[in-house]
Structures are given as C-alpha cells and as structure tokens.
Length: 171
Image (cartoon, rainbow, N blue to C red; front, side):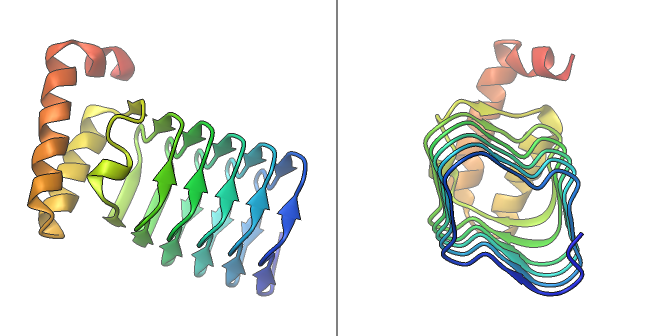
C-alpha cells in the first residue's frame, strides 16, 4: 500500500507491471508513463486524485474491479491493446478527453458519476458493454450536452440489443 503521494511520472515499465490490490491513499501520478508490457491494476483502490494523463499502454491493461474515489484523469492517454474497466467504479469526474483506444474495450458493469469522453474514441473499437452501462453512457452524454454522442451510443445499443448481443453478455 502507498500511504503518501506517489509519482511514477515519466517512468518506463519495460515488462509487465502488477499493482494488483494496491491501495493509493494520497495523490497518485502515472503521467507520461510508458507501460511496454501488460499492466494490471485489478482490485486497486485510488482514494485521492489519480492521473494517467498522456501515458501509453502498449500491452493490455486491466482496471477490473478498480475503485477511483476522487477525480481521475486519463487525458490524452493511449491504449494499444485490450483494455478492461469491467466492474470499475469512478466516484467523481473521470477525464478521458483525447484518449485513444486501439484494441477492444470492456466497460461491462462500469459505474461512474461523470465520464468525460467522446463516443468516437470508443465506438467501433470492439466495445464490450452491458445494457446498464450503455444506458448510463447515453445519460452521461446527454448530461454533458453531447447529444450527437448520445444518439450514436443509443443507436449502437439498440442495434446490438436487436441482434441479441447485449443479452448474451449479460448472461
């Protein structure tokens, strides 16, 4: 566990990195970090502000069951491999503006207060999502007055639900 402010700013992790079940009590900065291998933040808790701004995840990354209690930034981060935020929770604003996703993204059962993201950054990227998360995304886009993003998200949700894909995921 990390009880003081932590900064990995501009660090380069050349191999896989595991922060499994870590707890960051104070501010944590992973700004401009290069994760060359797989990054695992499974069951990690970020109690205060956390930032991954302009970081590069070159391998897969897991934020499953990760808890972000305060404001979180992934501003201008890039995700090259599979990315999972399955069952993650953002209790305050999460900034994903100008973030790039190239691989599949799992947002199944994601919980969030406000997700600053543009639909085109996740649309068509092998998005894995359940009905509840789709509905929350649609509501989120409307709250942020991103109405075209809301519409596009709704149409994808509707099409996948019609095709039975959403029901399969929930099963």
